Length: 155
Image (cartoon, rainbow, N blue to C red; front, top):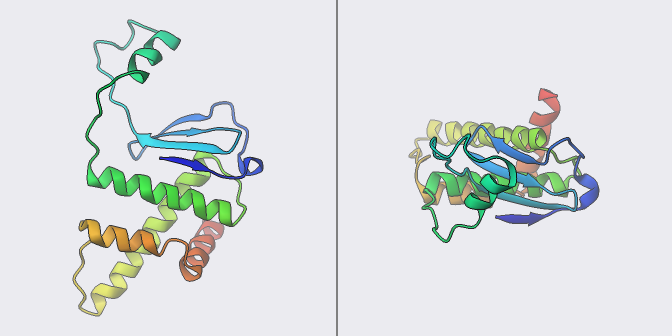
């Protein structure tokens, strides 16, 4: 998924290519473009044989599309929502701030599901429709305020 945010929000770092611990590759361009993708699998046999550009170009220019699980799609969508939220709030954007916002959104979603469960509502956290509803409310003011409060509290 490719996103565009104001370039002045991007923090300049030593590297703008990141592998997040949640199985996602993230490229944050200083021009404001952010690429979110499923983590690429690297074969153990290929590691160490090629270095630098040659190894990257072999993986980059493949005509084979890898299947993406619904969980990975939901993770990418939630990360995109986190980045859009940070852009809306004019927050500095880096790999660590994106991950903190993503984790805050997960925590708030978990707490809201606990509230629903206490009212005898079925917990369908693995249901793609539930994930879609969860992501629909990402930019609602009350959700945005909760994420912001959680981020401020954790800083």
